[in-house]
Image 1: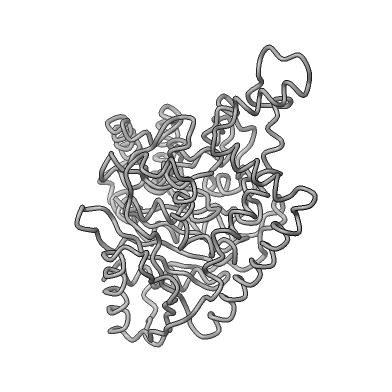
Image 2: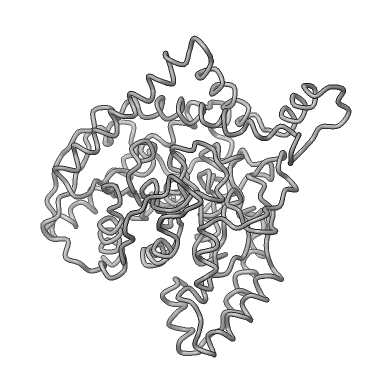
Length: 469
């Protein structure tokens, strides 16, 4: 059920929050083979459900009473594991709640568990996790996408109502497309990053997976807004997104970037997207061909910046303060080297090494500074285009879900899975992936809707229109 359906059944007393939680726990148990969760909060979730049922009976429950949330395991929940999918934090428990978590708790949402992810959110398939591969619920031989794969699977396989993930270059939208659910990346600064373990600080953003646009919009309203604990959170008014639903889309202009519909795009994905564009056109939306001329530089620009920031952010995991510490060491340097060599997986070590290289003396100007200049050009492309159109439609992914292990031997091919999503993170704009059908193998197809900075209300309204159609 979507949360809207849950609310209706709770109000008519057809179901209780306790029953909802126990149903999800049963699904988690029955679908263990998917490996969506690192930690399940079984007893705590049931206790909280009983407490919320009492609040509902007394008429003082929050607006999210009955919403059961799974949380990517790089977002802090007090007294629960915060592993980031890595051996180096295998047994680490958070001492506090992330701001997004505390805001959800205030509205009586409850948390059912911590979901699996690519180690430190570095990956596009949830295959780099220390805790094993998460599988696609539609076809368990295929990946679920990443790095928020566990969160997308939790929603798609009926293990939670919604799920929180994190975005650095498409890590909510891409797995949402692969699993056939909705996945939102808000504008940078819309949601506080306090309590989100940093990977690429200028790119990272908490995102939301759900089975309906309504569920995502309601969750976004709850967790958005400025936060004194996060200097990058924006003091921008938070819209009532749901009240904007059903607003007439006639007269809006949609941009179709020619660079995103090239020969490398799966033909079935392209056909499905253009069928949706025709529906929008028939309902009064003006279709405008646009150009984002710096699109070809998005992947190398993103990788240089993300890896440089990862090198800096992951320096804190050294075995000295918390997390895994190697045994049988003789010197402090020996401890650093052995702890990080054993604690980190191959993909994380690869990104740290590349990031350190591009920040090093003699290469900083050639790589990192140049990448930041190109980033500005990519940002400006969107600013210029959004003067002409109200939103943009693109594919979310170049293909549907691929086989597990298929791309592991070629990191560059894996990085190209994010080719349609990373530009939104570089520019800081908002975007949502929505399911629009399936290919001939029955695998979900996702379409991406991109919006202006802090204009989530427009892309959510368009997504809601397509969902209803």
